[in-house]
Amino acid sequence: MNVEILVSREYLDILRSKKWILVTGFPGFGYVGTIATKYLVSQLKANKIGNIITKYMPDFIALDDYGILSPYEIFMSDRYDILIVVNNAIPAPAERVAYVRSLVRWATSVGVKEFILVGGLNSKFKEGNEKLRWLKTSVSNRELKEPTFHKGLYVVGPLAILFLVLEIEGIPGLMILPYTEPEKYDPRAAAVFIEKLNELLNLHIDVQGLLEYSKAVEEAEELLSETLKHIKKAEDRGPKPYI
Image 1 (cartoon, helix red, strand yellow):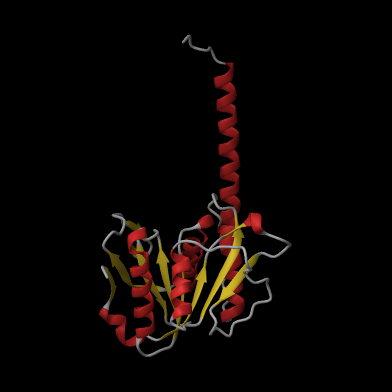
Image 2 (cartoon, rainbow, N blue to C red):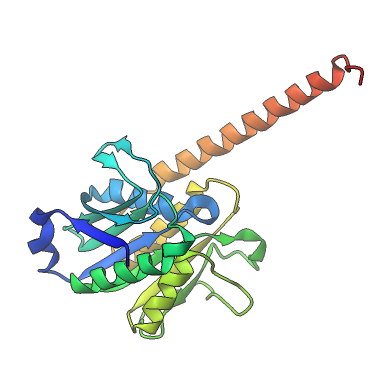
């Protein structure tokens, strides 16, 4: 299927000795899925245990606090029995189904009992004061107090494929979709997800770092907007070239 999941041998015995919850998302609307999973990794001090290699994977790496960052990474929090798949990129359209099926097959083989998925939901669909909507597979026993995902809304991309595969294969899955501005980098929406995860899994992750980062992003965007306005005004006052 042109997708390989490579895990360091030192973690294989731990993986096979427990039942896990796997948390993942993709860099879609608001980049919420990637922001939330990366923050979860940092706050739980999770160990990087492997990578997902695909035929058409993006050709980039970077240096992070834990070592080499790659497009698709797998982390383990042994203390909380949580696996986290951080997608720093979106799989190519031609291999999204293969990526998802390989991930689900691997996850079930190492004892994952439930998937919790995170993505962003366009805020234009907001109907009240709710911060998120949610959807679960038919075999999941989860119930959230917030409004459910309803008829007329769509989830697209690899997150949709992943949820569909979980439903077809009868695997418990919960998808949490905080409202976000689609074109913005939105740590505040990621904080909504982390707060809900705290509630569901009895975690105690402080979201203040995300909220402060969100404020910094907003201030930077505002400064950029004002700078661009001043530049445009200066250009409008300048001499006009002849044509």
